[in-house]
Amino acid sequence: MALLLNAQGLSQSYGAVPLFRNISLNVSDNERLGLIGPNGSGKSTLLEILAGRKEPDAGEVALRKNIRLAFVAQVSSFTPRETVSAVVRRALERSKVARDEHNGRAAETLGRAGFTDFNAEAATLSGGWRKRLAIAEALVADPDLLLLDEPTNHLDLAGIEWLEKLLLNSSFASLVVSHDRYFLENAATGMLELNRMYPDGLLRVNGNYSTFLQAKDDFLLSQAKRQEALENRVRTELAWLRRGPKARATKAKARIDNAQQLIGELNDLNARTRTATADIDFTATDRKTKRLIQLENLTCAFDGRAVLRNLNFTLTAGVRVGLVGPNGSGKTTLLRLLRGELQPQAGEITRADALRIVYFDQNRPLDESLTLRRALAPDSDSVIYQERTLHVASWAARFLFTNDQLNQPVSRLSGGERARVLIARLMLEPADVLLLDEPTNDLDIPTLEILEESLLEFRGALVLVTHDRFMLDRVSTTVIGLDGQGNAERFADYSQWETWVADRRSEPGRNAAPTPEAKQAARSAPKKKLSYLDSRDFETIEDRITEAETVLGEKRALLEDPEVLRDAHRLQQALSDADEAQRTVDALYARWAELEAKIS
Image 1 (cartoon, helix red, strand yellow):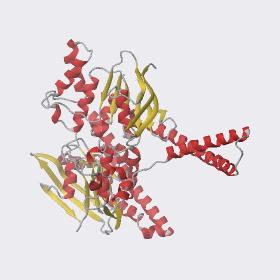
Image 2: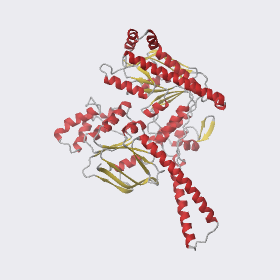
Image 3: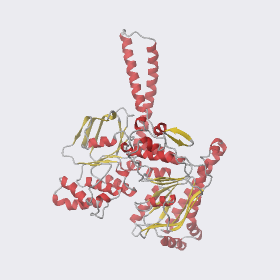
Image 4: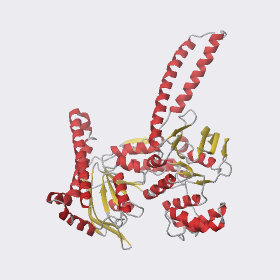
């Protein structure tokens, strides 16, 4: 493959703090590379250097002659009153595309990006559509190499799938900074991790994300063995040095020099492997009530359009619901209804007495004039967490902030740091129900993994809206899909929802979920095709799944009970019961799929 970009010896510091040192990498034709790394490791800065937007402190970037390189930054903004079409035409004016091809190229590129109204004002688009437009602006000049900085942060699930297909079917090479593990698994042909734990500051692996994880595990195992061997050798040499060898002897001097070299190598290795992760742990209340929120025939509409129609489900302790659906399908509306911020037009919401709901709002801004100290501890220099008083410095350290940052304004925090501040605030509130609206934006992969563990251990109920498909599959006990026309369907996991959507896209007349009337007709129709027992099963299967998931939630909650955990016999029984409850849920979903297949 022909080389497009070759970077050698790149180094960059932020003030006195080094971001990376002596980094080298290259990109060749048709490669799709994913770039990951902890927040603050310098990924965005590295991408800007590769794009020619920033000069490195040291090193150089060489590009193939006449290469067409395009860069899409993390934040996409456009001139007020400029249309979608004008944005793309402006990009064409800067390109070498022949003028008589501009109209066709603009229309084709915007169409590929999913736009239908080319006269829409760019600045007023949603975050996801602004990102699509920024990518279209980069694509219109037919680049050889496309650099993308966190493109999935502002895209919804449909937008992420669109970007995946775009890259998979492209003839250009790409380098994408992303923390979206599903995206990297599906789209990457090679992985790079920028991290000081590696001797060269960068680990490169050919293959997708899962291939990278295996290679990283192998590297860490090898490095741990090297560290252990070095520690043993240094221990031996230090004991020898304490005996006071005479440095005038040639052999003794050589050994002293070698010992000092080994000590330096061990110190460097210890420094590289010393890593920290945020400590996230949501606190559940001691509530014994199992049924927390119940929705019966819930309907909500805006401007005469039903966003949710006749929705029924029950939230119990231990149940973790993932909400999926296109933008505008009602996910955030449902969270606001559950919280009590909105009232439905029809139906009932029943909440347990004195229910404590904690809500993470993706759009809740931080006061940028506040210092980090006041953002974390508004009223004093301490916080109360799990009935213990902690100094704000200790609380900040839990989320990877240093003492030096405490008096800095929030405006200087990165996106990942701001997300950690919001999570820190939530953790101070004991909850029966967690409602999380896009909590993963800007979080790096280590923090995402810690967040997932915390949500899995949370003993209350969870409703999660996220475009992170990896988290949805790992955390959710059930997925509710909203189709944008007021209808909701229940699924075992995200993959089942994805298959359901794909099936309906490919079948004429089945691009939307059935209306309540169609559902009722479908429930009646099978009786002509199914046996009597199958028809009875079909009529009650959804209710039985709801009941089975409630039981599963109760069984899983027992696994968090301290008394059960202290009793080996009870713990073994609880594990067995939880496994049995999970098998029941799985069997019901399988039966539902079987019945659906018979009538389709």
